[in-house]
Image 1 (tube, helix red, strand yellow):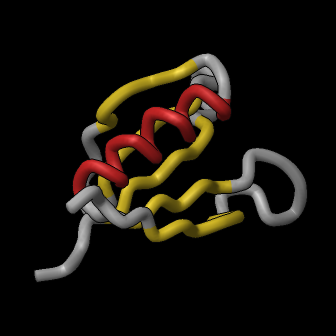
Image 2 (cartoon, rainbow, N blue to C red; image 1 turned 180 degrees about the horizontal axis):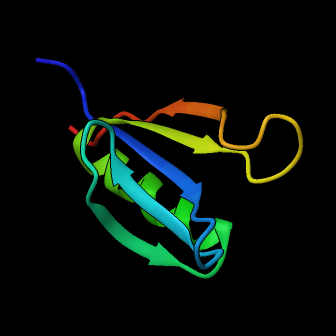
Length: 75
């Protein structure tokens, strides 16, 4: 079974940072700042041994994954 992949990206409609699972259109949670979204998403990924992808919000690479982090859960 494949591991879950959590994404953090900025929504153009309201400039909020969203957290969602790859393959789903449903937003799990919205945040005002990127740091808050990353911290929440990292904890979710840690609890499930998942991967975290953070997308760029500016520049030529806007929307592309800026960094990926595989978070290992507690055993």
